[in-house]
Length: 108
Image 1 (cartoon, rainbow, N blue to C red):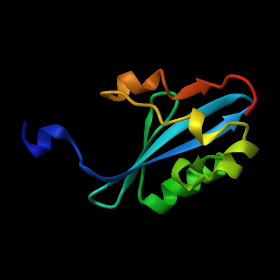
Image 2 (image 1 turned 120 degrees about the vertical axis):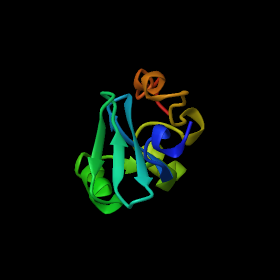
Image 3 (image 1 turned 90 degrees about the vertical axis):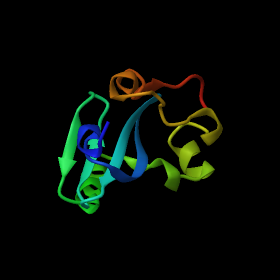
Image 4 (image 1 turned 60 degrees about the horizontal axis):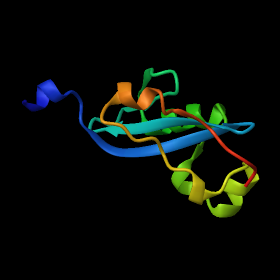
C-alpha cells in the first residue's frame, strides 16, 4: 500500500479524558504532518481542526484533560487511580469505538 492509500500520516498522538461521575470518556488527538489535527471522539466521529492548538482548545472547552498530563493526585480528584486506567486500545477506529467510554468500579 502506498502513502496515498494509507491516508494522512500523523506525527503525534495524545489521549484525553473527561469524567462524568464514575464514567471515563476518552478522545484521541492526532496531529498530522501538515499541522492540522483530528480528534476521534467517543461517538466514533473524527473531527478535523486547522491546528493542534484549536483541537486542544475544543477538548478543554468540553472539560477534557490530557491523560499524560495527569498525576496521581489529579486522577484521584477525578475519582480514579492512574493504576486502574489506560487509554483504549484497538487495531482500528471501529475496534476503538466501543472502548471510548469506560465505567469505573468502586471509588479510588
